[in-house]
Length: 298
Image 1 (cartoon, rainbow, N blue to C red):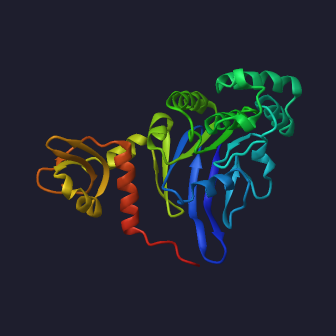
Image 2 (cartoon, helix red, strand yellow; image 1 turned 30 degrees about the horizontal axis):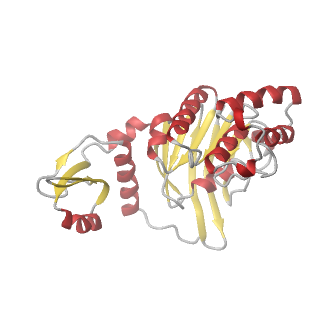
Image 3 (cartoon, rainbow, N blue to C red; image 1 turned 180 degrees about the horizontal axis):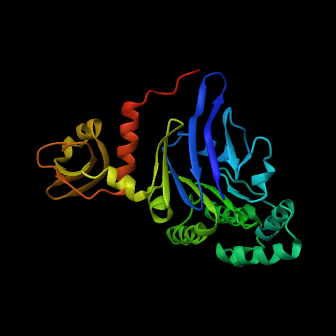
């Protein structure tokens, strides 16, 4: 089982590139796709899911070019897009039954699968209520269930924990961890803690380009020595934020404790601290922005 993304680019109009020469090779496990808003994460997800075609490059599933045969991956694909929508007059049960039929699942198999998924996403008690009355988090859980209907080999989830409460987020993280051993899971998000909890590999994307692809441990190791804590007076905070990448602030009696990602100590009295994945993310993205020019028209 292998997904190969080879020099993929996506152009909108004549000169705006959502992706540029993006290459990645994936096998079983969870890939955490991290990047700021507008970096190209959702564009990449739509291309892999065959919702849209790349302008350049190719995507292959087990050696099959998806531009020539998109059904090769559609048969084994589970996809939760960021803008997942529902039919408000259908119940959760009816909606999942409809999607199961659209995916070609046997009706008897589908009934048992749907019952298990509704229990998994904690919606059994409201399964017959119209979706129009569901909260945003409940609709998101329906979206998670529909993505798992066909027991996919390739699971793509774009911002899946948006709207979920903390308990639901933990449940979903655990589910992804359980699924990772037997399929490829791509988790696209801007929430670093979600990726940290489940990802076996992480890809950072910025301005449509791949910044780095490695294990969480390797990303952390590369950023060692670049996280600092600095205690400053509160009136200096705006000036410090304008100069340094500040990841957190905490007000205490002795001043503001500022966490900064920097190559060197940001000022006198700053002390090094243990690097977190969020620190590593900020450092890699910041270094890429400093060294790479913005994408230009071809």
